[in-house]
Structure formats: structure tokens, C-alpha cells
Length: 107
Image (cartoon, rainbow, N blue to C red; front, side, top):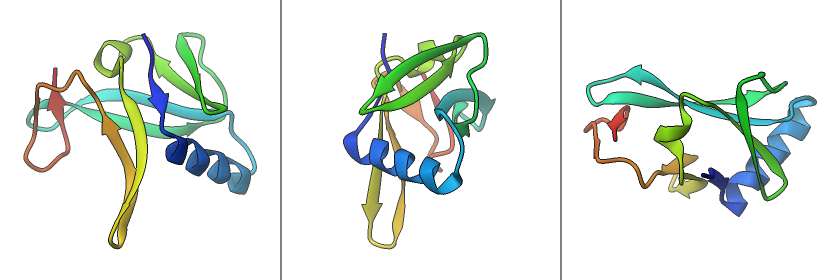
């Protein structure tokens, strides 16, 4: 089982943590939401929780709670720029269907 960051995503997270002045990495998870079932959660982590599963990708720690891992296993988080928009993109092989608005998905 693994969750990874693309090189672009890792560079973005690393530079943001430096600007922020604190943090140990990125926390990913899922929450119940939307019309398809679950939605992604993404936040910068200042400390690891006892039940976190930890991965490292391009020198950046990725923390995931055990409940979210089955939904995220095999996911690569990328950072993309398209025109004036930029942001994180989840490349998740587990997604079977996604909501039209892009807010939620199911596995």
C-alpha cells in the first residue's frame, strides 16, 4: 500500500512548509460528503497523530489516517497549472464514479 506525491506536488508542499515556518508534511484523508459518497481532505500537518500511517515521497511526509487508506491506496497527488488555475489533483485508481461537480467520488 502506498500514496505518493508527484515531483511537482512535493516541491510545492516543501516550499509552502518553508514559507509557513512550521509543519512536518501533508495530511490526506476522506470525509463523507457530496452526492457520490466521499470527498478528499487535504491539509498541512504540524504533527503526526498516533493512528497515522506515514509515507514519504520525494522527501515529503504524507500522513493518512487508517480509515482513509483503503480509499486512497495507490493514489498519486499531483500539482497542476492549467491557464489561470492551479491546484492539487488526485490521481486515484480506486475511483469508480465521480460527482459531476468534482466534489465527491465513490469506490
